[in-house]
Figure 1 (cartoon, rainbow, N blue to C red):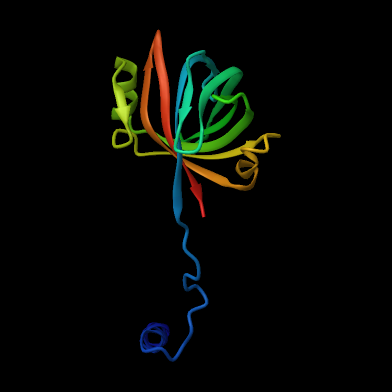
Figure 2 (figure 1 turned 90 degrees about the vertical axis):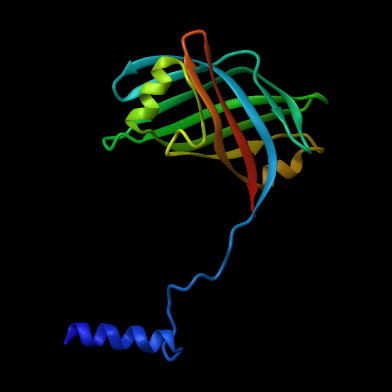
Length: 178
């Protein structure tokens, strides 16, 4: 009887007699903001925490912003029981015209065994080599020119990742979610 009721409800929904309360009502679009390049140095604390120091030489480039990443900055990566990594990044951008912009983001990284092995060899991974690597940047500044950044939510996708001993970095494309 339950199967018949479920089929009947599905049929009525398909022909429009029953409204679905779970129908999609909004869509998210994105606008490219910038690419971020961050040189890093990792320090494993234990199996559940890695602290990543952000090294000099980082930069941001985009149609409305360009600059460098300045000290201090870091990432506190926690490994969850499922093996997913949770990011907690804080850094400062100094724009080419002298503005200071604080950028912080969380994120989720899910790596495959093959991706971990490639990183251990010092290979460069792109977004296709890592199953899932998404960030959620937010910004804070007192600059009138960049005040609009205080009012947006970013979303980032890893573009490249390298974890060699003296040459480690991550590169993201950052978008404004609308």
